[in-house]
Length: 291
Image 1 (cartoon, rainbow, N blue to C red):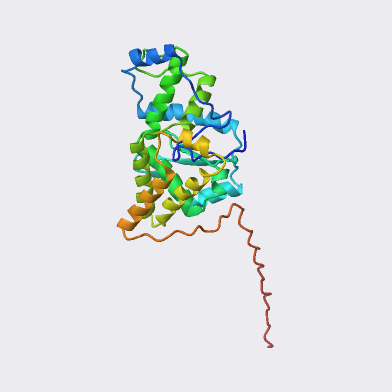
Image 2: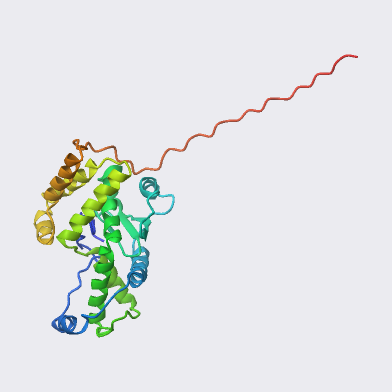
């Protein structure tokens, strides 16, 4: 895996710059089958969740996942542990120990956050980013992304291309589906709705909504660096980070909540152990009365 920054997963269009994120290319034959044979294809929420879980399990096995006592895991649990369920969804969180600035969510409620993201964003900014990911799950965008990934893989191998139901997939297909989930590109409307979901999530739970603007400013600044041409090319069909930052600012201004955000200290280390207090026991003295 190359140690190279990429934009945030589904939130920021999820680009692949590594083996795991390899793009899937459809041939003319597959495209023809897509146009002719799978217009009736449907994928239920249960189907999407099942396939997503299988694909994420494979991704987990292929990447370094932070353990339960790892400082990154402890931080993620502290920041987001209380937000593991909502209306129509249940979430599970893990950290990938990778330098990429990335995060993604899938139809089964799996949220994967890269340590590279946690290195550059404070707790409130993480809340905005992961809140956006939850928005994609809650709005069924992740299910739609899974449907597209499954259709592509079924077509590539000629399996189930004419079927209205899903069939079992090979280990190779699961790997490609996992990559496709990370590389999923949502429409501008879906991205805007997920941005709004994140804002409302933070507002409802009493967090600093201005961190959403800050998160987008960080990405906009990254896109001006050495990766500018790459990011510009890959983001051509998605909203500009600067514009999304402005939209977040306008929402906060409209609600009378805007205040320029100052990034807080980022702590990805385990909290220092509190020394145990020594307990002292008083000696029991007995007195005998003289007769």
